[in-house]
Length: 119
Image (cartoon, one colour):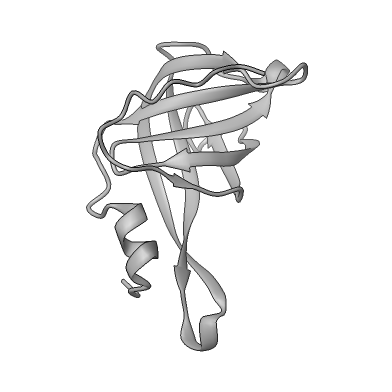
């Protein structure tokens, strides 16, 4: 198993929801799964054959879970552009991709989910 060392100061929100990514939203979009997220960066898992490369500029669309009425799982969607700063082998068929956002999120996802606040 690969050892992923913590490199971020802000706590990360770990969850496994679908994401879409591509060079832009005008062309073909690829699918992956969110691995973790903070306000400045995200890590997602995707098949190796569609994986971006380090220093690629990509756009990512993802949803952050939030707590709704009667504790139903809901989410709020975000689209962010950024640069791929790291690629790790996740398993034989998938890579773990780290992207640093050009513009950080205006929230800290872990705090919002932990506080169970709707935003």
